[in-house]
Image (tube, rainbow, N blue to C red; front, side, top):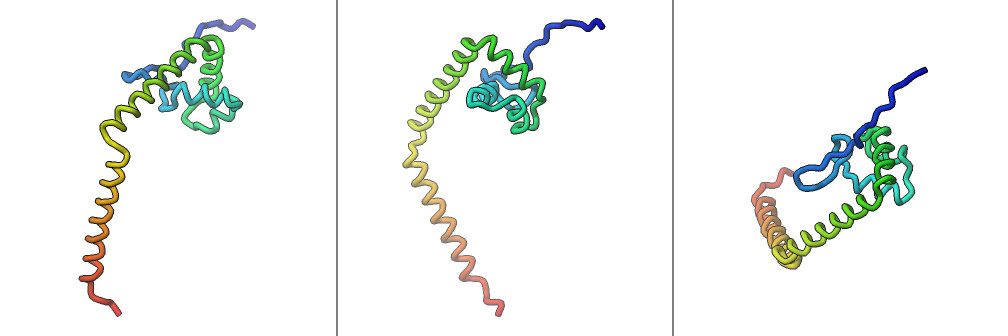
Length: 124
C-alpha cells in the first residue's frame, strides 16, 4: 500500500499583536506548551479546550519538541512584554486610585438604590 508522505505546516498563526494561536482558535501556543510541560497529555489538552482538534494538539507538541529553544525564547519575550504592560498600566492607573473610584461609584449607586427603596410605597 502506498500513501503520500507530505510535509504539513504546524497549525499555528501569529496575529497582529504577535500572539501565536493554534488551529484558527483563540487558544495560544503558550497555553498548549505550559499544559504539556506541566504533564498534561495531548488528549487532556484537547479535552480541556474543545475548540482544538486532537491532531492539532499533537502537531503543536511535536513542533514545540523540535523547536524548543525558539518557542521558549518567544514565550520568555511574551512574559517580558506582559510585565512591561502591567507596569505601564499600574503607573497610568494606580491600583489604589482604581479602588477609590470603585468604592465611590459603589457608594453613589447604593445611595440611588436606597433613595428608590424609600420612595416606593409599601405593598402590604
